[in-house]
Amino acid sequence: MFEPTNEKELKETEEFIFRAPVMVEQNLETLKEVYRHYTMLEEFSYKYKETDIEAYWYMKIWPLRIFACITDGK
Image (tube, rainbow, N blue to C red; front, side, top):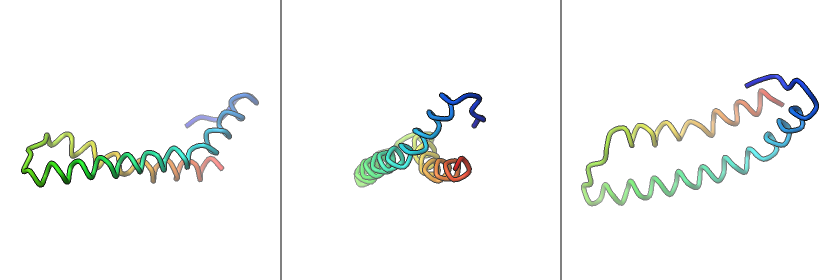
């Protein structure tokens, strides 16, 4: 979200861009686990908060946003 102002910041940005796909994959695995838990809760007619569901769906868009930012950064 910012322009690197020195070589150190540029190197940190490059390292982040390199590590980001792995972090996104880890987050996607976490989302799959959360989905499995919600599915199980739903089978038992558990009433969860609407904000929890909103947060879950909001989390699903982050991998796309991260990849878009990486693409722009490259």
